[in-house]
Length: 160
Image (tube, rainbow, N blue to C red; front, side, top):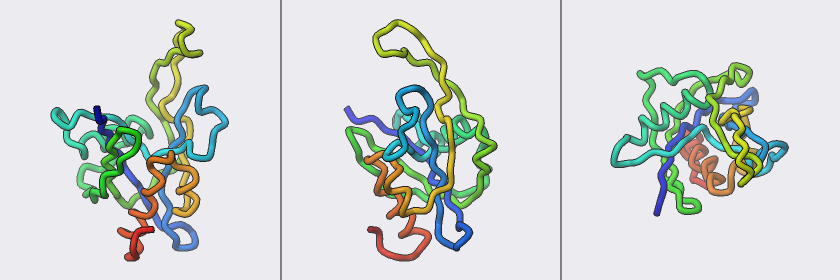
């Protein structure tokens, strides 16, 4: 069964004029210390029968970063990314966010697995602005194509 998630690709022009996107690092002991292919866009799962992808993307952005996108901001839908039985519905928006302002919601996990012990962790433990070329190596492998989509939208070039 395919699961769906939706998220926000927040972008800005970096100091050198090159586009940067905001990535988040998942919290908890499993992801602790992992960098390469461990980052993501702020996103979360939704049921497309019950919720609109854009509504989910906005909700997840607010939950994971602790700040909401202004409702008047138009989101640009990007191509759906298919990875490991999941369809990711990304939305592009220009904006800014100070990673030091990160206030993520928390979730409860069983850790270590099958131990019966419960641990409360932040969904996101870090946020960072990353150049598109670097993002390809940091993003989960299923999301590694997102920088090319951003490059196409904001740079006017062809993806890839």
